[in-house]
Length: 265
Image 1 (tube, rainbow, N blue to C red):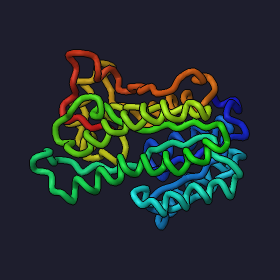
Image 2 (cartoon, rainbow, N blue to C red):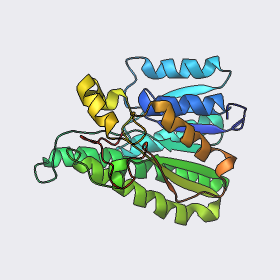
Image 3 (cartoon, helix red, strand yellow):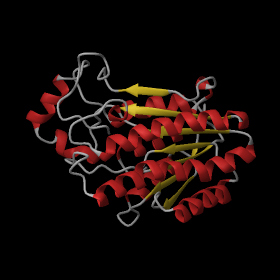
Image 4 (tube, one colour):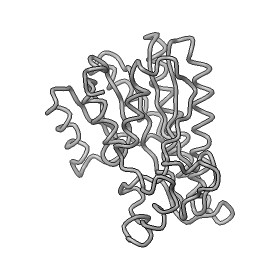
């Protein structure tokens, strides 16, 4: 799908500085979309580097610093994208955080607030701000990043699991409410993906081999394994798909298979 299937479309991708978000932003650009790349970190130039790769493909790109848990920042993000590109066709909510090790009983309130505010509330705020613009356009496409642990609980993920489960219901509720505006809303639930986000899980070869051995396909995912389904959902090939949760986990959800030390990103 690197054939211009998204030509002339505009996509906001949050959390696009690295990992899954970066891979999705680049995949959408290769398919012809212009990209509004957003992240909470701007100073290290990594987000600008992503924009540079997109521009090298002949697509337009702009960068924006945003904390998605802040409603004013999110509203400014949506307004800036609309102002630069004139419309917003695609929103990919990839930004999120994980604080490993907490059980729910042991989870400090500040950790709970930080995870829920970023992952669940932040996704809601982005959907709300951009969804309002899409509703006026009478067209749009929203893709939310959930997790395998949003479908089934996992050890050591605590509030993260709850936040990702909430994103699934948020996705389905929005799909119901926004269908009349010709807006589709879907979610992707990745399995264990090798990114800096969960580096501690796979940097040790023994740990990596143990996790990979418990996944039916025998390996952990690369970011591009998640970007390809995102590209499908962003395209007209999925024009009759809304309210869906696509698991991309190497078979982790198959009964009887559960990787050790599961992580949802």
